[in-house]
Image 1 (cartoon, rainbow, N blue to C red):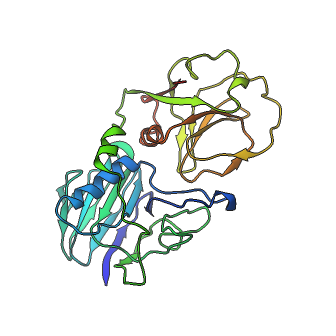
Image 2: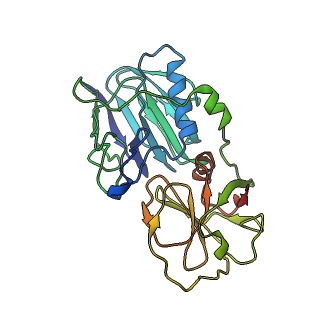
Amino acid sequence: MLAFTVTKRGVMSTFQDRGRSGVAHLGIPPSGPMDLFHASLARQALESVGQDSVPELWLENALVGPSLRFESPMYVAISGADMNPQLNGQPLSHDVPIEVNSGDTLSMSGARTGVFSYLAFSRPLALTSTLGSVATLTAAGLGGVEGRALADGDELHFATDDSASSVSPVAVPASESELYAIEIPQAGDTITLPVRRGPEFDIVDGVTKHLCVDSHALSSSSRIATLLGGMIHKTSLQSQEMKSSGVFPGVVQLNHQGQLMVLMRDGPTTGGYPRVAVMEEPATWQLAQCQPRPDIKICLELVD
């Protein structure tokens, strides 16, 4: 049965579940939501109206969201970045269940705050599962809809018994969500993110408690990595090559230009840049929601 049709694509809309585990040795990153906290809020909103077995599945939208025409009734919920969501031209609230009917159109525009918006569904969708997950990894063409972002005219169907859209319907418990609650960064904010020393931290010269002595502007970001612009450091091994070693989301590397970059959900599983710090997962969620603009500042602070 047809669930909805994409009438206008966003910049980058991909389906994500909790992601893949145990496949880093194959060179495959975990994928999954860039901001699991707000993704979980959307899912929990559907549970609040008594929806049984809400799928652990989200349509993650980056910077500009799509427009969807629903062909069947269901409940949905939105959380994360504010992309001015509307249903048939009427504004929608975040983190609440929304009933949609056949013929309804849900539209989003450019993000006013934040980067990633999440749309949760009360019914499972028929998506491609690879290595135990439907999470979309566009670089490898895995998961989601043919391993790619949504395009104009895509038609999404409800899952049948032999076409599941998620592996296990397990949400972040409310207590855990409260423990790791994060705020969407606003213009003018300075975000201080805790990190711990990485294996090669000592190659950074003259740095003590703050990995970045002052706040710096976010330069660019993607599902692969976030580059922290302006964070230039002298290092004792700046011109030397290093052997590749294992890396994962949250690892902070120092490139040859002396810039720090934080690996994100679709980042590589090995790398040759020094691993100067490691960022815990909740901090990466907040970093992911920082728009690449000069009036949001980032500072990494050592906590050990």
